[in-house]
Image (tube, rainbow, N blue to C red; front, side):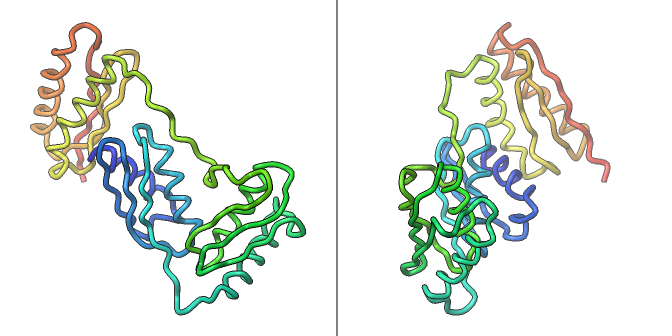
Length: 231
């Protein structure tokens, strides 16, 4: 649940995605995105942002691309061609698209993968595009979002303590102005966020100390940066 909140917070920080009210859920590192966006590029953008959040191991992107009225493949081909023409890093003499039931197949030959990605992102801005398949020579296997999800590494003891604390604090989320963020710096557990009362702050710190005591001297202490919401 904490991971879902982090991803959701990152998505709504993007001005282009904020109006859509994208819903985020998570389980064991797998993040699910649900909602409706206007163009495929926004679906790609939401996935790109989610993938940048530490702790995400896989994304199930269930966002739906909305269409206003009936858009034919001919309409989509026209708009894809226009977006490719307007893209500064795309040579339209080398790349073209062909839509089949809203799935745009890109064909052509480019100098490097960056040009292919530029073409894919340009085509994704066209109305009615539901998905993109790249047949561009030499780049069929590229990740169209250009993102990578870091492979999980062995956690340090403070990181394990931080994760346990995040899970424990999830029970307070409903009563807090904002969720508490937990991180690790030089072996110290850092807590940041806002509470509604001083009593909440005290209860959270006691909970944190009980958990951290179980990890011994490998966790050097707690830096409580939680503040009282005065609004």
